Length: 358
Image 1: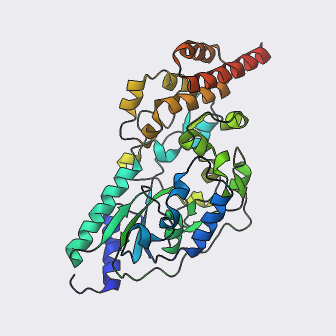
Image 2: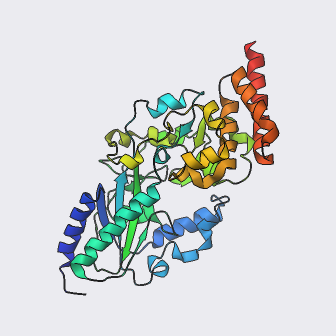
Image 3: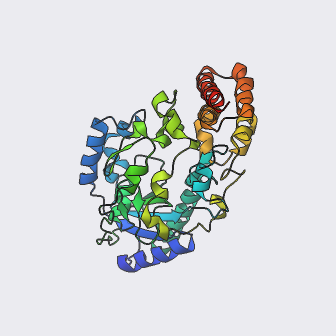
């Protein structure tokens, strides 16, 4: 590797990152001992639920040098994803005939977008300094992306456990480039600006934020609609409302998101009307239609059965409607056991509402 000025290289990396569409890059060292302690406590409490992968890799998650030997620094990058849209998220959440998809998932799969950009960044670095050791990660391995981003000066971890930037809110993706380059670190992280605010804790539909900075994944709607493989617990179904993939409530109320900017990335803009989808129409999709329309989407990974399960719950929570009731009854004979149980629940909910309205 030829000689290079680490500080000058870091400056160039930031320039290249901006050219590749990242809103901010920072550099962190690999000391995550405090984050490792907090993770151990979180796992010990069982807050990860069925997400066994959170514990599977041991200290590789909190010790980057074990995950990718030779790592000295982590280049952390963020990219805005909030799509410009005519219908505000709160408007969709307030209309029970529509389904709410977390705004990070209404467009194309962010994993592929960020991974390609970070790979291009690595190529530019190699063109400048020669061959070097690196590995790209975008939510694809045991990486503590938020603590690393916090150390790299990209923001602070808020009470809802998302990273918040004082000038950009929290509507952004994170990606990392583990490297053996001895780059100067960003040693002036943003301090916590949550103060006495508890808006995210107060608004959570299922009370999943059990203490400031602590989320019980087993109560979280994002966990129920994405990670949970079996039935959604009955205690949380009504609280889900019309949220069919993920939940943004804690971000929607965060006062720092008044500084968030809409994405300029075409790939993150809504596809197939997922920003304001009609629940009955979505429930009418066949499995081939689901696979075709969700190609290139993060939603595809939950599969058709869990998609239908989530939709059935949302239809049960929809306003009283004989059309919805007929749709559910028509789908029941062909449903899998998992989906059928949720359809039965939804039918009972609809019948109860129709009875009250008659």
